[in-house]
Image (tube, rainbow, N blue to C red):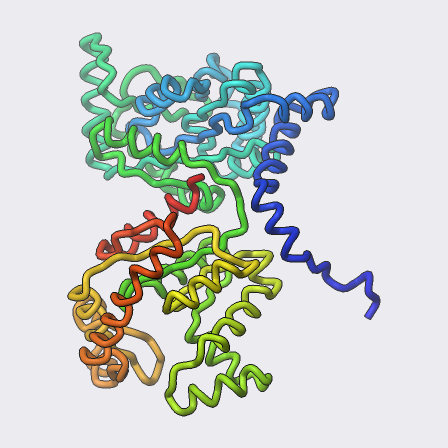
Length: 459
């Protein structure tokens, strides 16, 4: 094969240097600023950016259905962040001629106006909050093509009955000339319509239908930077949740994540969720050892001797297998989430000495009682391989129920031994990783995942 046609292999040390200095984030910020501002002298513009302290200015999009409270939230955030509050109303104060535009024409006009507005000095130096923009997947794609890429997207959601009640309140308040800021506005605009005051119930339901048709596409377009917040809460609660999310900065480092915790804490499940969302490599130590043992290598043959006799694999062999796996191209380029390792102080200290050491470490904390309840009730369908739980995830049919089997390692006696071993080693493991995050893993799995994500995106 022609050497010039072979895929380029990036040496691991290059990606580590890029992570250390946040080069991916720096390059994305610079390119986004160039495409958005389109300066006559790009070099001078870049030099000015590098010399300035505004590389981390807010770039926020607030989305949600009408009457959910986007403008109320945006007003508070713009004051706190000193960012420019940009809405469809401010971009299009006169909407009398919009009725002649089709969806494509309106989307192109809106993106052009947004691009012009974000070039202004106040947005360049203070940052911006786009409220209710984009309204459709087409608008989102055109914004991305124009280089307008937010760092954070907040989606407020609320039940239809709550939105109807809020809209009715607003209509009454406007009729009585009340300007109380605690009432949330119905603020979304359809091309060709200028709205004053509250919407009729028919108008609101029509807009909600349009929103629900588009929200899946919007969530997909911004899925990696999206935070969904329940809008049916006190304004203060919504504000604090949104502010905490916006104040996290995505540095786009290659993720090298270590999950530790007792058996039954949910490490494998959380690793799967992280791997699926962020496309990183899921490295489970027990699966890795079985895979190496089956590959016919010299290391695999040594490991197989121990696995075949149901003996513990020596640390020296485990360390070789793990280090080799983390050195492979998929791990160095896409990152990894490692779990089931290290088991003890010796393994932990050696992992800290790897060139591929983790840049995020999490301890999933949960009591022995919860671990036992989770693990001893696990069952596997020997036909499909699907895993169930007799309490939280029982099978739907009697046929599957009759096929379920419990793994020997999930018995109460075996689990107690494993838990005792983990508790005996946990203090030493925590001493090796003093900056690790501790996560309450007794919560529902989606809450645990959300907690992990928040800490992945902090400095």
